[in-house]
Length: 117
Image (cartoon, rainbow, N blue to C red; front, side, top):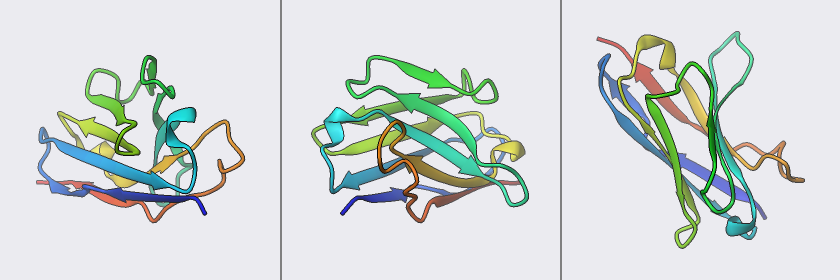
């Protein structure tokens, strides 16, 4: 059974940093690309960052490019999202996901990130 457990969210001031983690189980992690999404109430879920299965290629939304870094540790079945220079528009629930797979509709509980002074 696939499980994705996100953690690391919290309250941070504008300009601050957070590092999110997503630990996966129930599938062969190193065979799949991974993606971080975020969701704000009343808005569509937004793709934030994607990383290939070997970590060699990353893609970012324009809104986070240069501030966020996605990475993964295939030994730990974990994908990370380092978020720097946060602003209020980054406030959202962040989810990891397994795109391009039969589990692409599976979502974990997410982790809340709130950027506020």
